[in-house]
Amino acid sequence: MPAPISLDLRERIVEAVWGGSSIRQAARRFAVSPSAAIKLMQRVEATGSLEPEQAGGRKPLLLEPHAEALSRMVAAETDITLVEIQAELERRFGVTAGLSTIHRMLRRLGLRLKKSRCELPNRTGRMSLPSAAAGALGSASWIRSVSSSSTRPRPPPI
Image 1 (cartoon, rainbow, N blue to C red):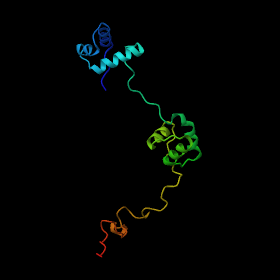
Image 2 (cartoon, rainbow, N blue to C red):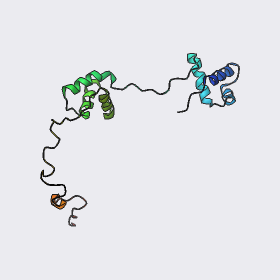
Image 3 (tube, rainbow, N blue to C red):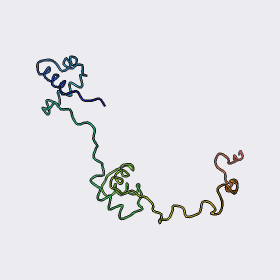
Image 4 (cartoon, rainbow, N blue to C red):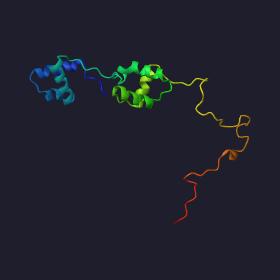
């Protein structure tokens, strides 16, 4: 994004237009785009200010008004998923929020889910034998004989 026009140049453009020059003539004279001069004059007529508008900054989050309810929802059900939160927000408040928006709001509230060591893992079965060293038993013995779409034999022709 380009930098705003300097205050000195803004003053000269406005003085030229108020002195009888057209906006486009003033823009050519001071080597700025016609749209920049037009927008400057619209701003001066509307607000009386030569200062540029604020650029950048953050937009307020969509879920900011619902932060307290979101905190209570997560506290009541600790294993709730983002999709379930999304559906609940839609049901309770009529707010349609994307999963990333919900995730950012939860992080802002400090409600990140990290499993602790005392929680059960996702899978309860062992993935390998405890006494086997990595690669000790040939890898072929650990592969189940199944077929996939790329290795499955073709069905016989009809």
